[in-house]
Image (cartoon, rainbow, N blue to C red; front, side):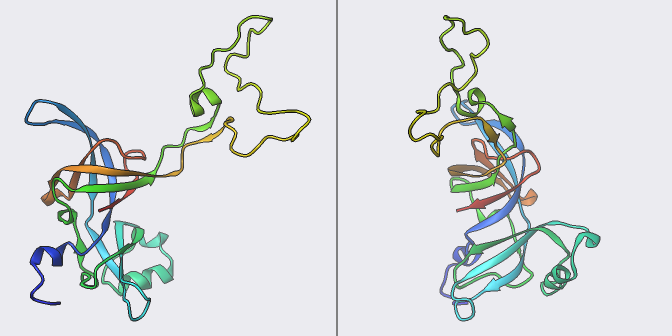
Length: 218
């Protein structure tokens, strides 16, 4: 590693980290304004693989987070984790990095970020099951209540012509599965970093239920 590179750049060579959503809280700024925030347990993540420009064609680092029981780990996975002198992990994710990547088996923690940074948080939204158009697409649910209509207020109504094209076009807003999809929330401000507990407090809400894995990227 080039000694002329500042120490802060050597530490912050990673583009992101794996975390777990702890829950939501609120803090107050200097003006007394209440700010809704999400608490994220960011790391510590273990470096389990390093991609190089010479071998793979790009620079990246594979991080692992969350302990897993050995009886639920395959022999191939166990051998992969042994190379980095760590135990089985539940979540693996690859992040782009600068050429000065952290060493194999080292840990990446929440001090990768600082208060005032803006991050993108990716997670799996809460599953809502099969829902109708009122809840799924925010239809009003109030139709013509005359001419004999008495029990169709929450129905979607007509979805297209009959004779042509004689089918429902793609993209029509209909009832169906809601939630349980990959969602990215962009440009969330890091309000506070509690480095000794690996906690990130970001402004606003992030997708997923409490305890679910999230990806935090710069």
